[in-house]
Structures are given as C-alpha cells and as structure tokens.
Length: 300
Ligand SMILES: *[C@@H]1O[C@H](CO)[C@@H](O)[C@H](O)[C@H]1NC(C)=O
Ligand SMILES: *[C@@H]1O[C@H](CO)[C@@H](O)[C@H](O)[C@H]1NC(C)=O
Image (cartoon, rainbow, N blue to C red):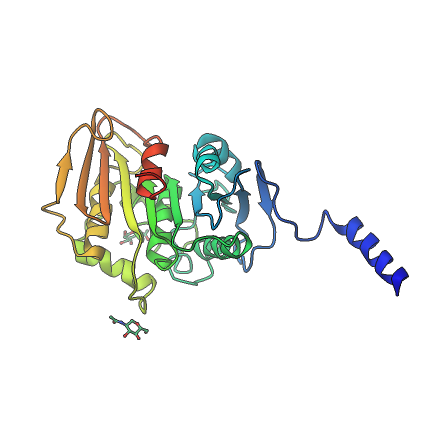
C-alpha cells in the first residue's frame, strides 16, 4: 500500500509539468484546458503577484494581426492588475491574419460555438479557478478586439458588468450573410451601414433572444481620422447601445469637450452608455488605462 502511494506520488511528480497546474503569477501563461473550444482559440492569462481576494477579471482582446502576447506587452492591463489585483485574460485568435470571427452566426449567438463562446468559457474557467467576483467581470479590446468586445457584451450580457471598445464596429455589423467565418465586411468597415437604434438593438437581442436580465455598461472610443473602420461606426455603435438601454441617441444627457483630454469629446447618453470621440486620431485610439479603471469601477 505504502509502496503504491510512493510510486503514485513519484509518477505525479514526473507528470506535474503536464497536469493541470495553476498559472504562475507575474507572467503571461498559457492555459490549455479551459473548457469547450471548438474554434481552437488560445487562452493566455496574467495573474498578478498580489491577487485580490475575490478578484475581478478583465478580458483584453487583441487587434487584427495581433496576439495575446502582443496585447499583453502593448496594453497596460497587466501593470494595472498589479495595483488592483484582477486577473487578465488575453484570448488569442486562431484565424490566419488573426482577426476575430465576428461575422459567423456561431460567433454572433449566445453559446453558438464560435470564438465568442470560447472566450466566454475562458471567463467561466477563471471565475472558478480564482473564486472571482462575478460582479467584476469586464471586457475590452482594440479594433478587431473592439468588435469582439461589442459582440461579447451583446451575446454574453449576463457575464459582464462593463465593456470598453477602442475603435470597433457595432455588434453584428460585420455579419457575413453567406455565413463566412472571420470574414471582412466592407460595407460596415467603410461606414455604409446605417441603422436606427431600434434596428441595432434588435441585432443585439437576436444574439440571445431569451435574455431579459441586466447588461454591461458600455464605453466606446473612436477616432475621427480612422481610415480602417470609418468614423460612421462610432455613430452606429452609440445608436446600438442607446437602443439597447432605451436612451435617446439624439439628445444625450451630457457632452463634454476636451474630456478626458484635449480634442476628445465625451458624450454620456445615460449611466450605462458613454462615447468618446477623438478628433484627429486614426486607427486605433490609444488605450486610456486609468480611465478604463474608472469605467470598470476599480477607481472612482
Ligand atoms: C455586411 O454587414 C451588413 C450589416 O452590417 C450586411 O447587411 C451585409 O450584407 C454584410 N455584407 C456581406 C457581404 O455579408
Ligand atoms: C425573464 O425571464 C425569466 C426566465 O425566462 C422569466 O421567468 C421572467 O418572467 C422574465 N422577466 C421579464 C421581466 O420578462
């Protein structure tokens, strides 16, 4: 009996690099088995050295041509996590060119089995692994990652308390009517899709028709000189979230010039929806880490 358990411990020791171990704090780590992952999205995680008790989770989603590693080194979230104690999840796109799939029915549907589903499964894994505070789960991203941020907020509203999209398009705007996965949508990118707030809200509702609970508050950044995802996408995204929350797109609650910095205009439509339009800024608007911490409620 004793010999068997010694043998067992020895075998476990040998196998330990391969069995499921908690990621090491203070560096970017790959997580292999986080749950169902039909589109083979990569999961990377940053656990701060000073992890909070019941930590928050920030999902930080990379741009086209990017990766978990490039967004980890090119965004402030891992450093901020050392101050605020949250876990950062960096998903990595599996597609060639590594834009996210924000065009297929699967990815644009709650539990539809696409990239968005894989990212939601990463969040579920991390909530359990770190006994996270489920009221402090957030999503953000740049460009293709901003498109995915809007999709995550639309398709998994129960999961997120807030989202911040840097230079994306409305959820569902990149839809491929022929069912293309990870397809580019020229009419959306070029700012030729114009819908009403109600039409955009319907696009969101159709991603999770049975849902009637609370939804994440959304903050949207876009540059006036964006030549990749034309600035009309800013208007359309604001219309979308105004439609979802029942705010008036035409008469916002407040508009502040030169906020949070010179040449940026912050428009608040209601407590849950804010847009920040950056005059003269191209693709993409730089990440505003300390403002992000405010929107997520880590600072006041
Ligand atoms: C692009 O998206 C719009 C909706 O935003 C849709 O009407 C259009 O058919 C899509 N284009 C393609 C080629 O699927
Ligand atoms: C929301 O959905 C639940 C479950 O389907 C249902 O029991 C409840 O009545 C719904 N609430 C509203 C306000 O529609």
